Image (cartoon, rainbow, N blue to C red; front, side, top):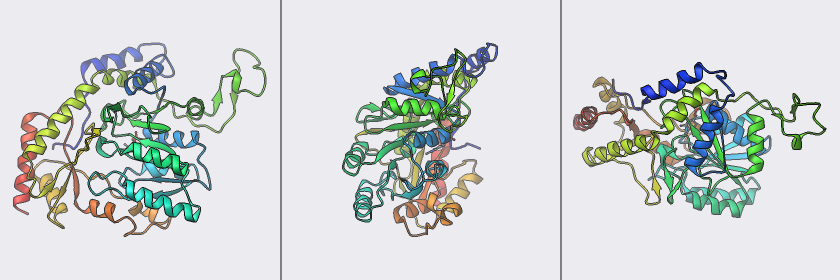
Length: 384
Ligand SMILES: *Cc1c(COP(=O)(O)O)cnc(C)c1O
């Protein structure tokens, strides 16, 4: 079975992990800060903090912005549930902005409309969380302009998007946002097993992130309400969590980071091959924006023949290709339906869900397998 995504771990990666296992510190040692430094330098951000998942990174980012009960966060319904759950963890209210029918990212015109209405009803969001679906950046400059007009903060869910660029700046540089989040889950671009990171250029957020990821504890004298009792002293000044990454994970991440550009390059080669060979009469292929260089975490296609997507998925599965769907719209999940969201609320997202599928793309997918993917899809469509 050819999966839709898969990690690429080599002998160097394994050797780096073993080095940490044989060292004095397997967690909270020197490798996490080194990984953070390299990530910040790659993404061109001032600060970077590694955490034990992107989910905890999204939660921590919301906490750093002081999102809480009575506050509202807006995100895209075409994302993993972790995006909106982060706001619920904080006791905040979630709402969704429909997607653009071409890019499948948050629609700028839908956002604009929703903001106008929200201003009239005094229900403006404190945070907007755009999601860079499949690794193609949202139109961040436009979202940033709207944030100045309406006074919201921006957290980029860039879980798919490390290695991608927007207007020639690396995603994660936070040029048009307050914070950006990467995921290092094995299906993502680089992996640490489980893991995530927050990038920011804001010193205040950087202090809060460090505190919230480690129990709300600080060793910074400037943040304490009294003189330290001695060198051992620390204070808990917030209610934080244990969201720390281990040195074992960071060693894997650091080693993977060296191959990041190679991974992206390989993904682009596969994407180009697919775009040339797939049956574009019956499929909508990815729409690439001029301003964006995608990481191609996902290669999403849409079937133009109505009502036949399930049949296509089943035919692919029977022939050894495990396509997947990213995503079931979050507002259609039972948990969110219980919060009051109803089918029909976000028509573009719901229509997308009827037709879209993600086909295999990952660095070790070889030419023979790529041919097999293309031929199987084109053949399956003929027999629908
Ligand atoms: C994978 C993913 C997450 C969660 O990442 P974890 O590292 O698994 O916690 C959040 N948002 C999006 C868009 C994702 O794809």
